[in-house]
Image 1 (cartoon, rainbow, N blue to C red):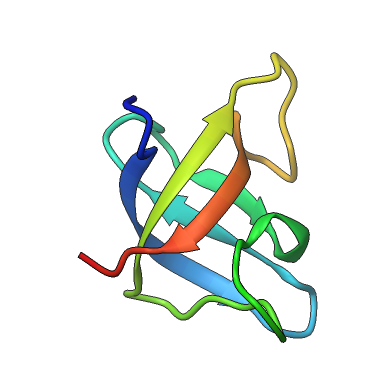
Image 2 (image 1 turned 180 degrees about the horizontal axis):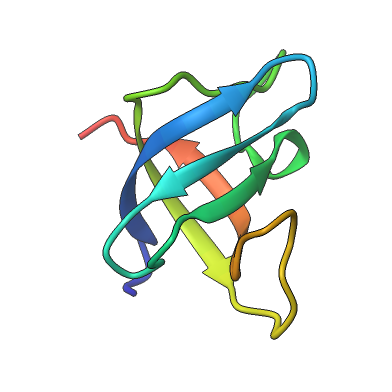
Length: 78
């Protein structure tokens, strides 16, 4: 994972619950993402199929069924 984070694709995002899942080879099984970690102004949300960059941690306990948890997420503009 470089300074620019890991490239991923949003698998799902529940607007009502404020969380979703990002897929990338570096996070087998998916990476949990909470709205508070999305780096964008205004209402923070993601859309399924959206390309993102993210940093993550593997805390050693599952977060809502996922081994990995995003610490920062931002839309991939490249």
